[in-house]
Length: 361
Ligand SMILES: NC(=O)c1ccc[n+]([C@@H]2O[C@H](COP(=O)([O-])OP(=O)(O)OC[C@H]3O[C@@H](n4cnc5c(N)ncnc54)[C@H](O)[C@@H]3O)[C@@H](O)[C@H]2O)c1
Image (cartoon, rainbow, N blue to C red; front, side, top):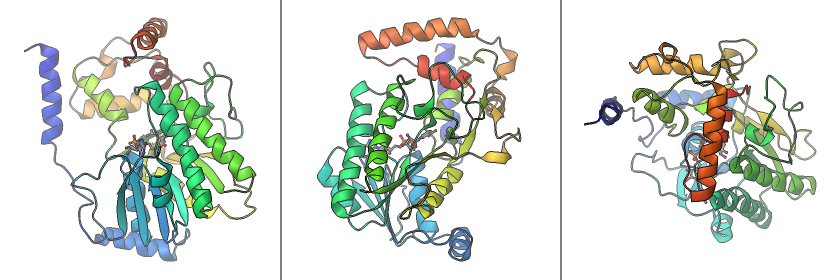
């Protein structure tokens, strides 16, 4: 067997053999979840709405958001997703799994019926999907959520946004507040994903301005935690087969957000949605804040990643030569050109390069 293939097989075998923690298959709340619920009912944040709807409720963030809402006392949470629930999903009586497509207005309308708040979290995410997916899900899908809420009289929407809709092709987001970041719409975007997420958010913003709904946008820079199947697994797999090197200077500053923190941010955003609230229509970034190694609220991206790489038993990224930025820029340009000509998405495009080298916190 080719040594790369062998390493890949080894990496996958190690992941399969790793102990699997089945936290959320029980019917009832665990003792810890019960404590969280009690603390939440009496605590600083107060109860969550009785009937909640989460679009994309089976994704990395969505699944945890559904669970957190139940842990915090929601009486019913509708998890709306295009994929059917997997066998190990949490089977709690408060959770209703609805399989449907955001692109069907009728399906969305049925799902949001009677909701106190909709967390619109479903999206075509990342840089690797065919172009039309982004428009269909992120723009037309968001329009359907908006129309469905209007028809069903649902007033509150919390939108999972992305800071990449505020990135320019040249400037970093280097410690700027939300108000200091460029606003949408922008002339150009770093990726189709970012452009269509911005378009969706603008639809909600306009409707909010017109008094048709009330909404707040909340975004993380980079989410990590259980069930992540995009960010860390891809990079660790590349490290495991010896293909990952540090990009450029390796000094980029990044704000991370644990999935639980992001869900907390999405949930407390709902508390600020009320008539004449000064927060309506606004965009907020949610991160791990002061728990980052640097008190300004950031980590050095490659230092953090190297800890995970070494933790997996792979060679430190610092033991290998870094890849110079100018070379990566040329490779990314060629990859994007090939993708545009063939429709086949290659891993190292401009968006990926930008995410792995820019400052964003
Ligand atoms: N993960 C991150 O680092 C990150 C960073 C910035 C913003 N966000 C935002 O957070 C949200 C959740 O991201 P995630 O990482 O959990 O992504 P994810 O891909 O794991 O989840 C998205 C979910 O949406 C569902 N979905 C897609 N198309 C659908 C359709 N047509 N109808 C119904 N459901 C559909 C998918 O099946 C999936 O379960 C997204 O809105 C994303 O833009 C995530």
